[in-house]
Length: 517
Image (cartoon, rainbow, N blue to C red; front, side):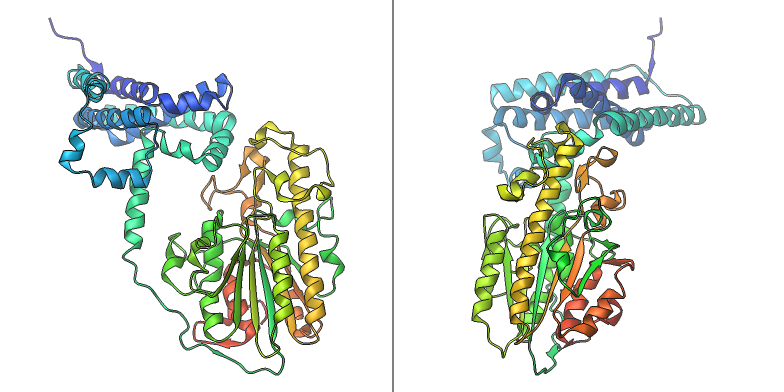
């Protein structure tokens, strides 16, 4: 009697079911602490269908068993360390594993390790190997495979779009531990990140604008570049609330309506806008570490250059390393007002014989706890969201907290402009404000930023708030900026506009990307 055989597609389904169910214990246990059971169950189903789709793409015919066995063994090995050591599989962990000597590896060969691998790795692999799989002819097999792929893709899409997508984007964006405990993807992701990090070490450092010279001028200049955080263009335009009541009271103000970011995370947008790279050429988030940026150039030509920061972690790790070669760096672990008070203090000790560039990198409207970005007296719109998970708040509460944070930014910009107005008798002065990226506040189920690649990110995350104010003696520059107020612009213009503002002559300068021309 012939042994009955089953299509190897059953094997793909059951292997996926096994991997998702048995190797993600820590992931789902942690998830239950945050989400209701139906959300966790839906996440489980999404992961199952997505993994089935991946295996259908990878497996064809008789190689299927070998691929599935490799994944089961690898997942059992990784899951053991996640569960017993309570660790995530980060790039550093991958590097440590690669550096492990045989003598060190022997210390892991404990009875519990051998038992775990044997029961959840070797035994399932044996069952997969002896599974009575059948393989159809090519055309019939191709039709069946394509049909299953469409089915799994549709099921995954529906669950992602209508049930779990917004929650998982928020989760992976705000609680990074989940990025490192999800099997089978976490070790693969971390390995790619490690490879990328190693590749960046081979990039030769490039000095930029070594030919730069500063044009002589009878009156020196001060430019204050305020880099905001998570402020989108819509709230600064025709919005139902006036969130810039004090800043808009100043003459010679330009409010750009169509200004795009370079990226949807700070680590890309900030270094991108300060280097000669553009959105299309900034292809690696580490590129800024291997090239001069505008701060290097301004300092080199004799412009006194300052970096004031409350949004980089510490004074030694400014975003993308953009400030690591300049002399005057100040870090503040406080509300953004501390930066502006320091700026005010510094401006009381200026020399009329020098030009100055001040870059203030603010914490702005960083989520999800928008209510922490401003002092209590700026809580104008109430009630406000105070949940760690913004999708647990009503839209009204979330928007109220976010809008209050922008009102606080308005107050700070106004205070800086007032100080510059006091200095415009001795200097030509200007203040530019540009947010690093935008923000989602529940539109289409999205929250915060960075959960989707730039090409898929909603406009709320890519269209940013951008302003420019000019002192009375800079009418020509003001008119040039004003003429572009409603043009399609981007952070690509920042680098060259600063060169143009200070009249720095260099072959790197691109006049077509100078807002002041």
